[in-house]
Amino acid sequence: MAKLGIKNGQLTACSSKPNCVCSQAQDREHYIDPLLFHGNLETAHQALVTILQQTKRVNIVTIETNYLHAEFKIALLRFVDDVEFYFVEESSSLTTIHIRSASRVGYSDLGVNRKRMESLRAQL
Image (cartoon, rainbow, N blue to C red; front, side, top):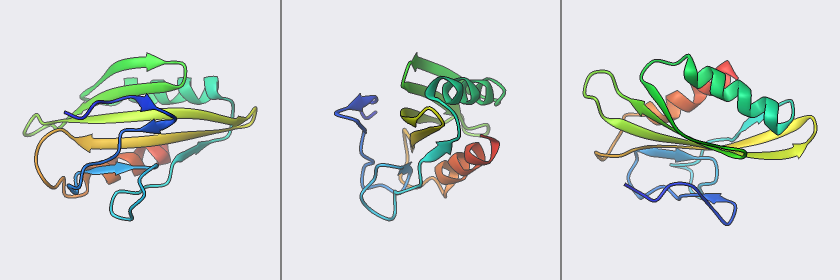
């Protein structure tokens, strides 16, 4: 498992495998737009925590002021995906949430991580 968390303002880079998306990725295959929340960091953080708490098979592992790590367990095969959020308050009315979602095992995720993050975007 890759070392998770924020280092020098960056989430861990995706490996070369097509089973990860990250809003800070430099390549098209792994890149996904960050989440934008119209509100301050604290409100954005609470809104996301509420969504995750209401989502099945999610375990919130780490909650910090500007960082959140959750594990998503895939129903059928019980694989675990690591999902990270890095909150950057741009102003009192806008928070950028950098995102990373990666499978722990396997080569391809068949687009599951990207679909998950787009679903969270729609809910937020």
